[in-house]
Length: 575
Image: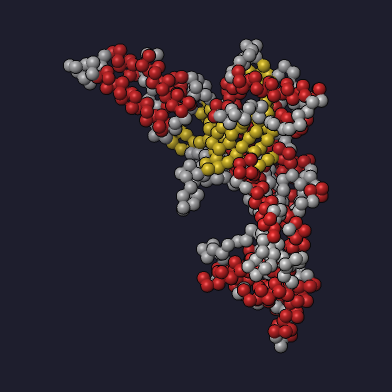
């Protein structure tokens, strides 16, 4: 290549891979550089400034025209696997490159994925391909996956990467054999989970022999490529990244050491749809675990080596963790992915000795049952009773979500998930003694639903003047009803009666998903309801609502008192 073009290509690659400019910025700089070279050439032709010599034309023909062109010329473009994602159901189909041509792929034209509906299953039937201007077919929703084997081979050519991977396993094995387990866990290979983990041969994972064994974490998240505005989130693109746990934290998350790809937008896929984008990567890790892959050469050897790799952690924020692993969302009754505590009232429990761990074999069995269910009702029943959906993580023979599904440090610590739960839910600090303006102690916080006139159902709309009443009712329900500086149930009834309106009481009861009937009230609240009705009415029939359905202020107050008396029995020991 001509030295001028060598410099142009090198400039392009440095701007992209070292400086980190976007493809559009790099292409702009390439265009400007090419223009300057052409202008410089034109000054040598005083008689014909727009006519170039044969040598100059050859140089111009060899100039890079875009970033992708420069990367190909430099040999760092890498290999990608092209998938066609269904625009309707998001099922992904791998394209097969045509012989002798890496730019054209054979892909199915119609989606044949079986979609589960209320009536049973049916073929999706959506079109996958569209015609380009040159009459060739391309995916409507393309999905590119970097070559995992290329990634492994490239990284093992780096001495730093290779040495840190082998040192991590060898140091851990040596400490196990000598009995010198580290007192403080500094990295993943100091933890019992990795040290006790069995490899594909049944021996300890860190006992690698003459192989190279790699332990990865996988991360999934979504972001708005158009930035978040006051109008809300209108576009969403996903990113999946795999990081080598053996690397030092100072280099572990550098772009050159991450295996990364994007989940196409413009909207975030739902629970079942997300799995279609994770499945291709997890299938690669299944093969990388057993039988493994052979790399022809590494930074330390030209004889080749067998590599075995696995995913040991799925690290996400809380919603993405549940979504990727096939668990129900954070607002469900299945509040934990580790233990079998069921019901939102258990979020206030600190008795960890009575937190029964989930059975992995049962989780796997019901996840597979969800995958094989042929009707929507069967899937709904499995989710409702067992709290799991199918996730391709179960393709990994060693997958254990009770130990391998974790919340990342940024969301857990820096953005305050633990802080909020400890301080505002469990009240484990001085805020537990917070006193209301009239001297009563707050027992707990609750994730109250704020009144929004645009989203509230028509039957629950409240006049603007009564919106403040909703807040007063919610605050009153958070006050302690036993212990020091507490209200009695009689006082709380009076407070709700004075501060609440029928509409506000009805709205709060609705947001708490309380039943509209009065049949299951506790004996104490039921007696209070009868006594109040007798004191305020001369008609015996007004004591009970027709057919037991709540209609009046006193009926809704009884429902709310019944709720707060039951919920406080779980919370107040921790205040």
